Length: 219
Image: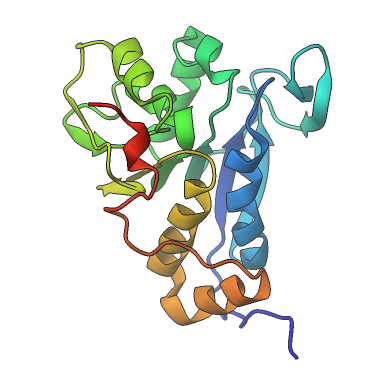
């Protein structure tokens, strides 16, 4: 049985940046990256953090060590910017340095993507003003409250992921893979991406409007 995904003949290569930080939710970033891995001819992946070096997925240098080769000054201009969530995002989403970097990249990025509580970065920067978005179900009300009323954001509690213009936001953790599946179908077509889902033996949700975990949000 073949194990290779269909190849593309495109010569245009995009740069995908993934924001990493201490106490990052591993699957928020690496679930989507499992899909992006199969598009290495078309998409170059870079990991970026406020400062270069090791970041840890659990407190006190525990968990999985992740290395950021780029900081906010050396990071190239991104075509696609993925913002994951995790416990560490709570302390950073209103950090001025993070906001300045995100806004700078957003000016020219083709797409902005967030997974789970990573949507708080977009919200705090005002990038979701006048838009629909979703976020982690357990943290749904906390994210809404933390973003305040400065911006007009329609938070969609029942959605698995939401697309509004060039901004894609997903619900919690594994929803990031479902969103990425749909995002790559948007870029490269359903046939090729379906083959990749078969290779990684993952059955993605295909209805963005219905999250099976929506019941976790108590209205």
